[in-house]
Image (cartoon, rainbow, N blue to C red; front, side, top):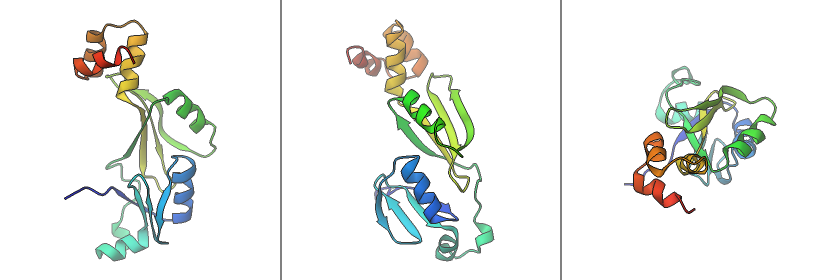
Length: 156
């Protein structure tokens, strides 16, 4: 068995498609009208068709539940954050935060309130510390990455 990807329920599939394409850089693989699948494996499904498909009333389908998030990574967090800041109308949960392990992230909502996290890759975090003059050991301890993985980034 292979995991095929998450399905996100939306109310306005055209508005959601525009958001996922323009804000998150997703490319449509299939568009079935009430269901869209992106190359990345994320799928969008209209609330009404999802409720019918699983056999529940639309009122049983909860949006903006904060029960999970779609997680994206970027190697250039500063450029990504600057691009996002230039897009009007984005609703942020956390515009910028740094986790205790050093990873910077932004959390925002899609048009239906589904939570999306955009974080810098952990390799980028480790490289940042190494460029600041940290030892491999100190960077590995902070990032919680294996020492060997951080050491391999030393010359990259």
